[in-house]
Length: 102
Image (tube, rainbow, N blue to C red; front, side, top):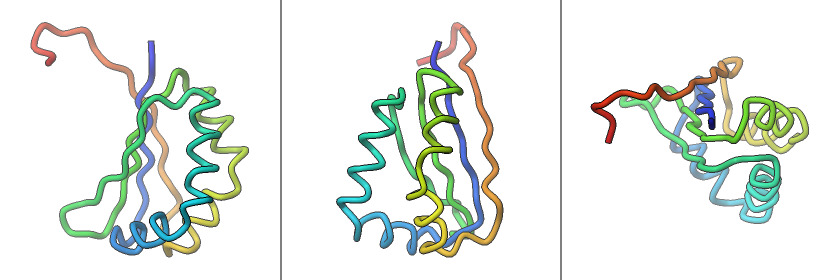
């Protein structure tokens, strides 16, 4: 069963977009590594008040994500360039098998 990974940090979402979109080669490198280590889906989200960003990923395993995160110095670079103002909070979630899912 896959896991959902949520990484939450205080940051300016607009600045994050600029940082990610201005470095295609770095983004491609990070995404390739993520997929090789078990990433299934990846998305950034912004809080309604534009003070926080969330990374919402689906991974084959929590261990795969942890290996990726530890072996990707680009993530620290992206956070620094974005001006992240808090330590990222990382949580792992698993889906529940309920009859109302769609």
